Length: 146
Image 1: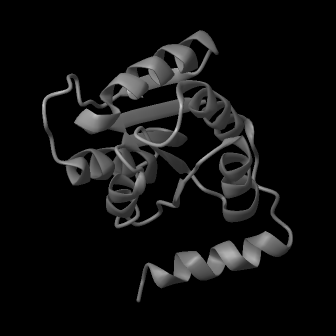
Image 2: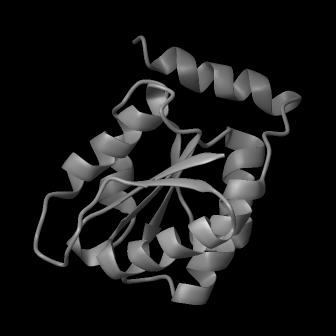
């Protein structure tokens, strides 16, 4: 699986940790930045990762900012992106199983390193359940054209 990562300055340290973990777990990783704790604008990184997933350059994406919210909102502006803010392994897994999320966002100021590890692994190994959830995801996709 090809996974693309991005973060703002607040998420930089956690992103570095999760990138190394994903590589160790055997995922094909692309890190789109940021590359330091120097201040950057989270919408830029959210859009970069969102476009990479939407364009098929990556299968899934992982985003990190201070709260996880701003960068997720930015990514969700890109057609084809379903980015969910996850707080733990269960919310990350269900985002994929029920919502077919293709990007997961974490708040570095609110989630600990071990919880982020567990959540990322749950997100990257989960599969969309389909069934009754497929019609709901289709309704979400229809919203992109309105």
